[in-house]
Image 1 (tube, one colour):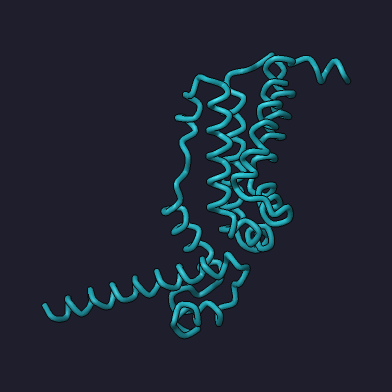
Image 2: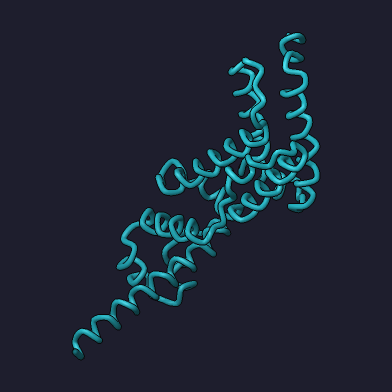
Length: 207
């Protein structure tokens, strides 16, 4: 009985240590810091303890992306798509995109910098970009003039516009607040929607 209790106690302590390391790593990753020594200091453990639980940096990145994914609120594309009023759907979609990009902002640039060497970070950024395409699809709704190529271009443009990399540039380089980004994006997105739904032949005529 005593041995079983001590075993469970050790497991709980190990679980808590892992969690503290992950939380510390997420905090530092948001500032672009990935060194093991800095992580150990932030978590209040030794570097050897960090390596015991996470032998490689990729193990840390994987644990962080999994933990972050469990705590992140992902907007429902189905619920957004069900909004029949076009103006309301556009506003809601932009708001959700801004909120999600703000939540993931600290990790986007780290994923860009280290994506080539970290599958976990690369996949995380890819998921954010895929979600932006999903939002773009929702914004355009069921509009379709029979030209799949033009619709794909519009989706690609919108996905880039509301995606995580553009958002980071607007927040960091342009020093815009989330509310300012939202207010700038809504009319631009509305114009793209109107171009695709009300004037589908405009671009082809101009070409």
